[in-house]
Image 1 (spheres, rainbow, N blue to C red):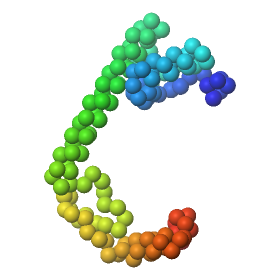
Image 2: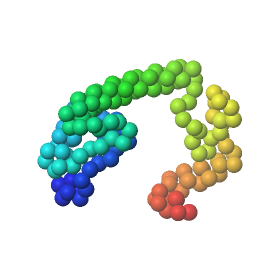
Image 3: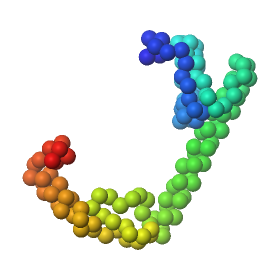
Length: 134
């Protein structure tokens, strides 16, 4: 779409939503702007003029990458701690209940018949599409 010049700019909430890391941000912004004349505009970060924008874009991009790495480390640490305490990382899947936070999941007897039907139907060779439609 950029090659066809279907649009003139890309609006992003912040530069952190544009690319995963500083290197990608520089490469893609440069390609879009220089090769296709498409500007990337953040609606929450200042865009004063080209000269200032060059500096602030680089700073935001590096800060975004650092924040992403820091967040990833914190999430992993929290998930590891929760697992070490015997906790779950998610809500119970269909067919199970967890009555209280931190409690071991138990079979949901109301849903058990559906789970068994789905399992048996798949085992008999019915497609996932067919089972879902039923």
